[in-house]
Length: 265
Ligand SMILES: Nc1ncnc2c1ncn2[C@@H]1O[C@H](COP(=O)(O)OP(=O)(O)OP(=O)(O)O)[C@@H](O)[C@H]1O
Image (cartoon, rainbow, N blue to C red; front, side):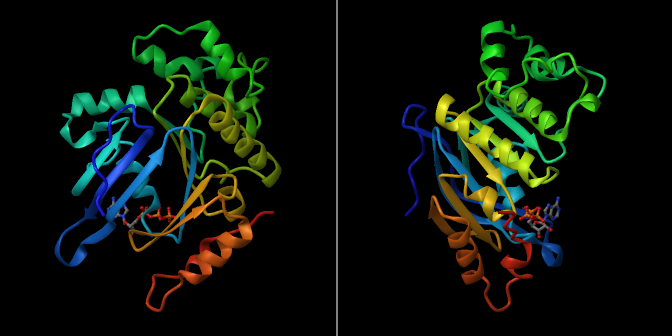
């Protein structure tokens, strides 16, 4: 059944309705996302898993307004992104979306503190010192704000990236393999911080990961194969996730889900 469009106050942070994204045309056509309809509840942690090429990043980029869609709809905080011109879409990306990448994406010449406030300053918005303290305190960054990224550990750099993403109070914090460049202990701490953002700040987090253990920090795990959501699991353990991933290996499927899935526990 096709879900009805979202209103801002109905507890849904993001929604896709029959979302389709096609790259190329004719013989080179790739249907990266194929009629995906999902609702992401506000204040929840959702992970997206699936084999390489299954459409995880494309789905996330379409939901964040980074990629134009081919068909269907994307709503963010009740706003239909398809109805927006480029200027309005840029504003939505700046004000209502937070992004955390595997490679941190911090500006090397700026201090941690300057990196954190940069999006607000670029938007011409005032930085509220209380709000800044409320974001950096729980992330344990209070005494690191004057350091440049090269003077910080990988885990600290990722926490700076999370603080930067949180400061605008986005509708959704999108995280693309946020622990991919970290050792397992540091990755665990970063996942703990993302969990804390959800539990304490009622932040909505959507994370792409290949790591079943990382995904088990989420409230919900969506499994993708060939551009479609093939499983929707409620607080799965890493073991249950690996079982689901193995089940979704079908004859003719590209590669195999298990070959990309990892458990670091
Ligand atoms: N810009 C593009 N042009 C053409 N095809 C693309 C483009 N981006 C992605 N694709 C194709 O769309 C499909 C889905 O790619 P996507 O990056 O979303 O998968 P993924 O599940 O995130 O993979 P990975 O885990 O390897 O990052 C793949 O077949 C990919 O080759």
